[in-house]
Each structure stands twice: as C-alpha cells, then as structure tokens.
Length: 302
Image: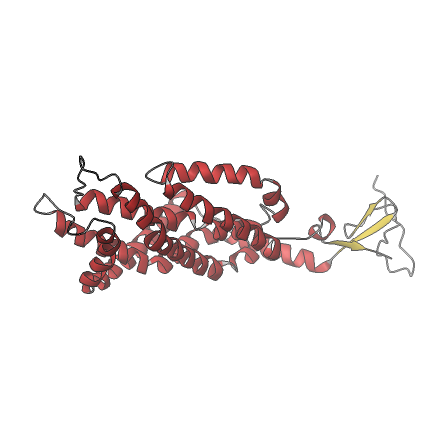
C-alpha cells in the first residue's frame, strides 16, 4: 500500500520541507534546512548534456587523433617552409652563443659531408615547430575538449596562449642565459694539455636539448592553472607541499641538464622554484573556492 503525503499549507499539493515525504529540492543538516539552488541543476544539466554529447567510440577517438596529428603535421611543415626562407639568419642566431664561448680564433668543425646541411634542415624544422606551436596546442585542446564540461572548455584560449608564451620564455631563457653559462663551463677545461675542438653536431645537440627542456619545464604555470580551475589542486595544497616540490625541481633539473651538478642545474632550479611560487599565486587567484554546500547547489532556507 502506498503512502500519499498530505498537501502542505495552502492546499496546493506541493510538499514543504517539513512534510514526511522528502522533497528532492530540500535537505536538512542539523538544525538547518537547505534548499537546492535552481541554477545549479540547470548548470549540471548543461554539463551532463555536454558530457553525453562528447561520448565517442574507440574507433572515433582514433579517427579524431589521426585528424589532429595530420593538422599539426601540416602546420609544422608550413612553419618549416617559412623558417627555411630565413635559414641563414636563424643559423647565425643559433651559432652566436656557441661561437662566443670558444677561445679566440677557434671555430666549430664538422667531419661528415652531410653534417652541416642536416644542421640547416634541423634548425629550420625546430623553428617551424615553434612557429606552429599555437596551432599545435589548439589541436591538442580540440582533442581533449570533448571529454570536458562546458565551464572547462572556456579555458581553451588561456591554455593555448599561456602554453605558447611560456614555451618561448623558457627557450629564450636557455638561449640567452643558461646555455652560454653551461657552454663556458665546458670550455673552461681547456689547458696546456687539453684543446677543445667541438664538432657542430654534438654541440648543437646540447644546445637544442637545453632549449627544449626549458621550454617544457616552463609549462608549469599553465598546467597548474588548468588543474586549479578544474579543482584538482589548490593554492593551499601547493604551498603546504613546497618543500617536496623543491626536491622534485632539483631532481628534474639534475636529470635534464647536461652537467648534472654544475651551473646549469642551479640556473634551471632557481627559475623553476620562482615559477612554482608564481603557479601558487595563479591557483589562489583563479582556483575554485566554493564550499561543499555551494558545490551541491544548496543554500540556507530562513
């Protein structure tokens, strides 16, 4: 036998928060009566609807991934063609810190016939990838966006812009500051018994390794901002674990830098620590600050 609740005051038949039959719009907590915010359900419906629309099969995911990879490859190829037009200026830009660190009258050498030609192509390819970076990051975002809620998709432009800016900042910091210091450190072992005669291929490999490493580790603020907006991390959590973050920064710097314990390790660790503090500020400003009741869409009923 089913129990039929009595109508509330006014005879409208709508249950009040004090009826025996609980109304889904109300919830009690201690001496408080909480009412669900109507806007919360609307927002949740939009998110659930977006989530439902984003469901794809495994083969559809693979097709989407293939499409994003093709678009990224085309963007990088176009950037390569543009960079190759200015290849001599780019070559001079890369070689300047390498040549400046050598003793007077000494030059880089190459011993293979194709070594210098391949170097030109490599410089053009890397420059093309940097030029295409905003478009590539856009393709990355478009690939992960179907699995995000509507309010998370609004971070597309900040994600693309910040990731591109911080990559360029990291690469520039390596080119102008860290690599010259590291290069001079290696050259300083020249003595009456030792003569440094560097080949262009390993020297450029060292240069590009450091440039890419700094460009990637400088993505820390972008990643933290993204996680903070999704509520995964908070400024308080990051601040509480600062000492562990510092340890991780030193370990990563030791692994990534070529000397593993010299000037480049310090040159990477110090800016990374300040980037971590900057990331805490971003998480504090832009991170979620809603309480549990607000997250549930509930407000006090007087």
